[in-house]
Length: 118
Image 1 (cartoon, rainbow, N blue to C red):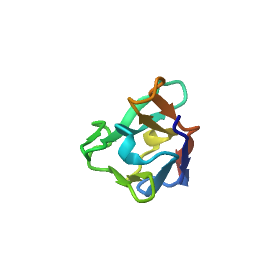
Image 2 (cartoon, one colour):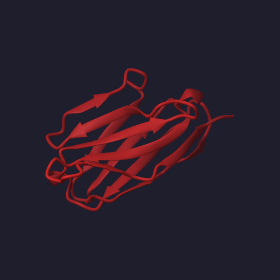
Image 3 (cartoon, rainbow, N blue to C red):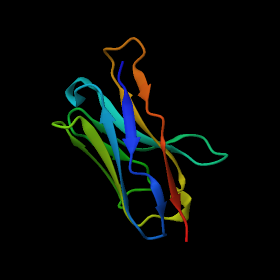
């Protein structure tokens, strides 16, 4: 099992920035894909960005050019740098890990709330 703990959420004004962190209980080198998802009220959970163990990254079209995903293998931590935030970015952000070696290979954090508002 992989435990994931998110941090860094909060209230920010439109145009501002936040950096989310996700600390994993296992070495990132043993995790195939790390990702950030978000779920806004009344909406389905959606992928925001992901990064593979090889370093390949992918972003949702809605955040391209504004959000960056990165990883620090020495700290077993993945980051989501969010710039130029918009009110529509308001959501609970969840960290996800796909570790194919596990029988239950999808792992989730408990989420951190990001609110973009004046």
